Image (cartoon, rainbow, N blue to C red; front, side, top):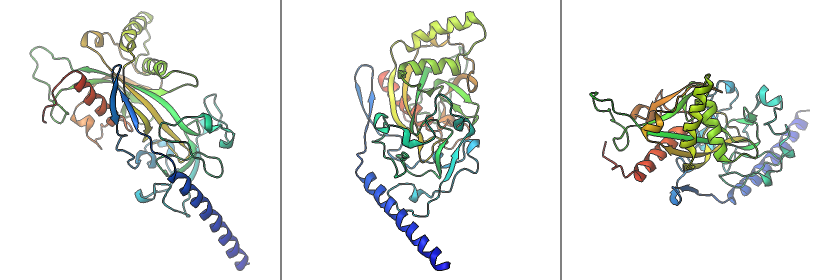
Amino acid sequence: KQMEDREALDVHMLTVGSELGWLKQQVSHVPRASVQVQGRGKEHGIATRVGRRTLHRNARSEGNSAYAGQRAVVPDWRVPWEVDWPAYEPIEFEHAVVKAQPVWADPPDAAEVAFEHRRSFEQLIICSPIGRPLNPRGRTGTSARGLLGKWGPNHAADPIVLRRKPRVPGAPAHDAKGVPGGVLFQMVAIKRADSGQWAIPGGMVDDGELVSETLRREFTEEAGALNDPLEQADLEDALDEVFKDGGRQVYRGYVDDPRNTDNAWMETTVYCFYIEEKLASRLTLSGGSDALQAQWLDVDGELLRQGSPTSLYADHREFVLLAISQEKEYLKIPLLAV
């Protein structure tokens, strides 16, 4: 009996080794794409991805409470798929919400999805021998879809609405210590119900929906859900002005999100909308949808400090830094030493 068990184990290990060898070969032939960042009507340059293929960390964490106990530990050096790890055993996890098969979710079997018609901003979608797409940034410790409805990339859109912080007559100058360029901006932010963190008021792109439509819809749902019909009408008029020029693309690509798994991950398109105070004062903000609250938030040194208790959700800190850096260049604001 022990001899039979040993022979069966040897056969299994040979099979796993063969599959990992096939996977390593496939990944090695995939080109790494660059990300185009667009200015107002012209190409603004090439943006390195957040950290340029840095190891994802939020995607290996239990930062979302639904993932508590649902991740195997993945050391940094074993994150890339190119690293052989025959003993890797991710924890299979799909939330009950996804298992209920809502209209926005894919079929339970990834093999039923036509990935040749699905786009990733990162690279060509590579599937494992059992037909599941593989996270382009590597292992996460969790397999299947977790809280995400789509196998592979789940696309979102995030609007960063910025203004320069208003000066109050007679008040002391703003403390811009630790802020790049020494100029204090404010952004419209929402407090997420799932993590309690401040975030950009964005959300998922519906099937067949334009990104421009998602930006406006999600901003309204998460930061502009008012009870008074007249106030809501005034807000809609103001938002027409905010979003009319389409904004400026800041980033497009992978998001290091705590909901990511080996087989499902977040990607986003981020746009910046800089507005003057006269228009900003017309935005009556109120948390809605899955947001606890919405407000103008100082983009200060504490908010921008990595690892700060008040830091922004997922990669939103990096997106805001990109937006402010480019906005200062566009507005010809000198980048002062801090």
